[in-house]
Length: 222
Image (cartoon, rainbow, N blue to C red; front, side, top):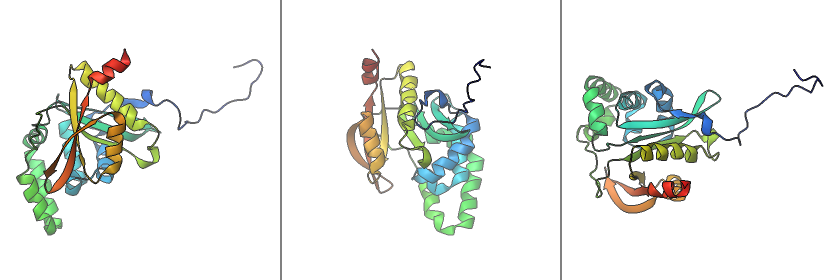
């Protein structure tokens, strides 16, 4: 205790403080909370399939040595996460093979409750990972930050950890896809330094394909 009896100061979390130390490796035990964020914030095929399928995806994918990610904790909750892979061509196939029975069960359960989703079932059955022009296997697959914690630099900090991981693996480039209507993510990617490569169509949806040269990170760190 201070001898001059200074007033007691109660530390309160500061929204502007450095958040680097609040970021940790994304693990299978985080899959439940991450799946809730994904279901709320990330549009696409997985979101259409619903929370149970999203949970199955993360729970299974995070057990593979090819997949990785990071989460940011705020007030004992996950404020944001990033998920990536170094083997995008086999990501979804690997999940399907590892958890075939639960996936089939969840799909037919969905169709039983919502028969109008039969078209979605056909999408899943005939789904093949789009073969991109460059053949790059490393990919930023998903990134999300809970709205109350947006504009605090969490996304950028998560991406710093994402970049560091790939550099340590000896990987010099990764790619990412964004729906053409998702302007906020496009702006984030471009601000981060990603380069637009081309536009392609998947499931009738136009997407932008970005790339990032990790040597620029290494140059800036010197």
